[in-house]
Amino acid sequence: MTTPDTQRPRPGADILRTALRRNIGAMTWGTVLMGLYQAGETAFPIALGLIVEHTMRDRTLGSLGLAVAALAVIITTVSLSWRFGMRVLQKANTTEAHRWRVKVAAYGLQPVARDVDLKSGEVLTIATEDADQTADIIEVVPLLVSSLVAVLVAAVALGLADVRLGLLVIVGTVAMLSILSVLSQRTGSSTREQQARVARAGAKVADLITGLRPLHGFGGNHAAFGSYRRVSTEAKHQAITVAKVNGVYAGTALALNAVLAAAVTLLAGSLAFSGRITIGELVMAVGLAQFIMEPLKLFSEMPKYVMMARASAERMALVLAAPPVAAGGRARPAPGGDLDVDRVRYGSLCELKFTVAAGEFVAIAPYQPRAAADLVSILAVKVPPGAYEGAVRVSGRELADLSIEAVREHMLVNPYDGEIFAGTLGTNIDPSGTSRTVAEAVEASMLTDVVALHREGLDYGVRDRGANLSGGQRQRLSLARALAADTDVLVLHDPTTAVDAVTEQLIARNIAKLRRDRTTIVITSSPALLNAADRVLVLDDGVITAEDTHRNLLATDQDYCLAVAR
Image (cartoon, helix red, strand yellow):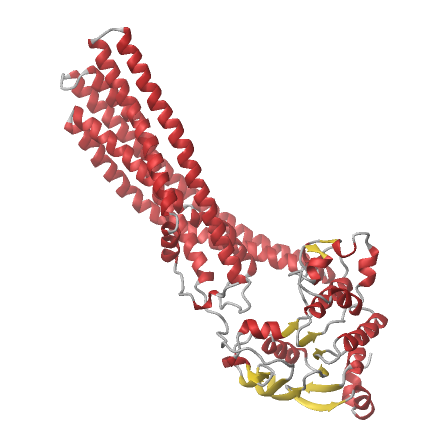
């Protein structure tokens, strides 16, 4: 997958221009077909006027048949042009929405995190609703042009009957759009605020779902639901405000359309009464006054949809234009798995220095959880190299010089709260379907009992976030996924906190066996894992204060005994 880091930022206007540019062919055909539809709609009252005019002069079956045939051609044109025009536009709209959804998802799935102040729920809303509304511009422009065609055809037809009728339509349309353009500005600002509040409500829901189990555990679910209720209520009030603004806009547009149609009808009646236009022209004018309301209504609604599309595009730009947290270099780590942390200062880490040789199994016993979290963030390249002092070297090369993708392929950092996805046990262990060590990983992580428990085995269905698995099963599934990746360097953070002591002992032995001659770092206070490691580094107050085997540290370091003894 190509990393879009090198692409230039996309503001909202650029996103809309891109959508229009790559759909120019479909929009051209759609505009032509929808223009035919609007022209046919407008031609219907013109044809009726001409039929009345000719019928009154030539009352024969031939002229009647010709009139019926002309109406049939107009109706057929209207029907087919609408059908195929909307088919072309909606296909292009749907395809463009899909492209932007994939684009936003691709940015979210890049190895390098984005510096964007949005929660996952907000990003979800942007990737769905905002992508759809941005793609609506593909339909808006052709419909706008086709509506303009209908208004111009009506103005020309009325102008041929009497110049004053044509001028009335043109002047009235300009005046109506001027008024509505002012109202559309308020509609756009209200819509942007509504989208932001709905996105915040979505983010709150995502947070609640993520933390639902612990919330029930300590009785915080009611307070959390109250918090969501407040956010959702704000979104509701804003939605009501938007509905009021849209109602005012729609009502004003309908009223102006009706006033213009009535003015055309009254003026035509006055001209007919004074003999300046014929009866047939009066019929045409009255018919156009009625039919023109539809394109005028559509024409008047377009500014609102343009504002909505622009607001959604600007929200998508928040994701697509967000700079990467770490730029990274282009080099790749050399084969091997040595890791060197050299005088790193970041957060709670103070001059942290240690080295892990290739093929070594090292455990780090942190006395403070914050120090462990800071170290994991640096190793996972969630913190850009420029944000901390010191250096981290992988296979002799500094992280700043290495490609982020290459680092992630070479060194896997598995967090203690690894996500479980909806799918199967197998797809959670090996998402890409390319691992050759799935069976070994399942056995090493002691996930064999979960696989054997179900007839489907690795094809057993897993619900979203592992809702149908216990805490220990989810943790072992995450560990199996990390082991199946079979990277040169593996960093595990508290991989066995949710399993019993016997299982933990077996997992520790299995990891040491499976990862023999591969570099493995376990950040943990588990005695079983500490004992299985070649050596233990004690991390206290941000520095390494002791280094030895687990047994020797138990025998010589009282603080260590108190920290890891269970």
